[in-house]
Length: 244
Figure (cartoon, one colour):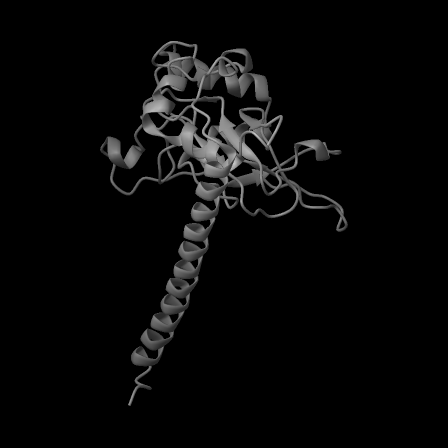
């Protein structure tokens, strides 16, 4: 059985050993019975929890403590789940255990991120970074796509094309690896993908409309958060019989 998420294990233990075990399970060479956590592993999403396997309420999690000087900056590395939904989520990260992280791999607004390796159904997810927290680094399982000439192709348009289910299916077909294992798309194969490129004026109009929709969605999310806070406050006052 497996407990703590393998991605966390790989930071705290020998990474090659952890990777071999995960790959063996995914390839069917080893049989994992269940994960002892309270939710399924992102790395092995088809592996049930012990609770789901027939032992209700079972949960056993491991944890690790790391010590560092007070002035040590907090560096984080993205998890694959930051891109999986094809919308960038900078809350999906884990601590990076490295003395001198390479700033060249820091995620920045405007980046277009592509998952080169994941399970067959999740590989080739793409997300456009509109904003992000600092000190957040790319893992080796995510490509940063660079556009040579943005006067010809905009990041917003490329994101929309690659995120389209039909186009994504084509890209996923380039992945290597057995059907039951982690699929991998090499840089050389990704570079063979052909996409339609409309006039840049049309792309920019499209990008402006997408940006407007995103601003509207963010405003709605902010209002929902404020309503949730208000509702929680009203509940608290109701339970204390303070409402009149």
